[in-house]
Length: 260
Ligand SMILES: NC(=O)c1ccc[n+]([C@@H]2O[C@H](COP(=O)([O-])OP(=O)(O)OC[C@H]3O[C@@H](n4cnc5c(N)ncnc54)[C@H](O)[C@@H]3O)[C@@H](O)[C@H]2O)c1
Image: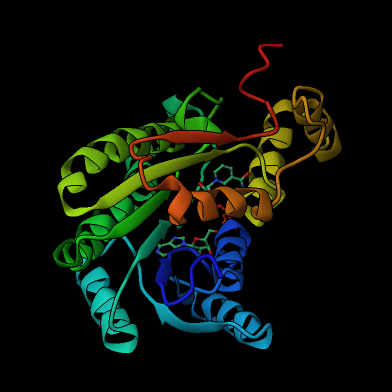
């Protein structure tokens, strides 16, 4: 199997895209440290992996707090003895016009989506560096490349992830660690439902009308699925991507390529 004898940590793996990535890594043979701030979600994902015949253990941590990140990585090292792959998925979204955005909401979105990626990458990078091998994969967003109404903090955080992605790729390359990013378009997860409900309320539309609007601009004509993102994670984590670092791949059904 592609990732046999490897260990992966996936943040935000309690549901949605993170869960899909954790399941796919386990199917590819990796042992998976499933982590999330939501203990019940993380436990369910780990259970689902074990039921499917894979190897997983769940860990609870808030990626915005360095003490929790330190504890998490120490626990994962104690349990699995090594970390080959880190996938930074944990994220939060908000939708509020920039002039109405409270400072605390700005801080929270930046803390989870951007600082969390830095803290996890630095701490896990310190474990990977002495072994001279590692794969870090960061989940940014289509909103990391273009603007979206009411998403000042979210777009800033996701653009920031792509800047951090490039610098980590440079700084960690001497240790044999590659760092790459994925920019998903709209996936049918709970986060996306929250965004579409807020957009619908702001525009006086139904959620169905907002969905139709997005799909009409998506050349492949459907929402993304966690499995679509997971396939690209497997590429970045696998041997075929040995000479690929500092890159960003859109997994958005062609949405960004379509100016209409
Ligand atoms: N759903 C989409 O359409 C979409 C599109 C582009 C990018 N993304 C990105 O993909 C990632 C996953 O999105 P999703 O749709 O699966 O979201 P989701 O809300 O369904 O899942 C996010 C997970 O992150 C966890 N989390 C939140 N704060 C955390 C913290 N401080 N510490 C640890 N875990 C925390 C949540 O508990 C949750 O399980 C996010 O980074 C998101 O920005 C999503």
